[in-house]
Length: 76
Image 1 (cartoon, helix red, strand yellow):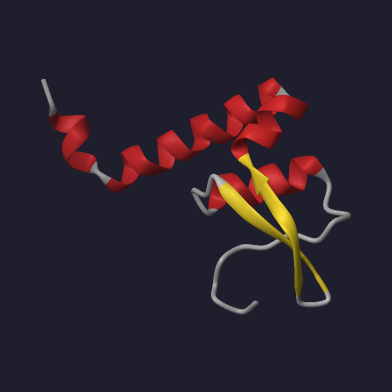
Image 2: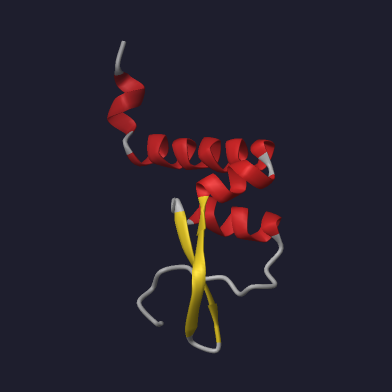
């Protein structure tokens, strides 16, 4: 799987996975080992395991989207 989509391995720490998810503004990430898809980590999975971590990811993603659309900042 080499299509530019961020991927994680089965042993990836949940905090590291959350950082990758936030950085890439993704709500889904493939879990891959030896080139084989093992599953998909979703924002819902993060929410189930750590509600606080899921909120951090969603907040970071919102901040990144806001920075990409500066016209939203000009609304009075």
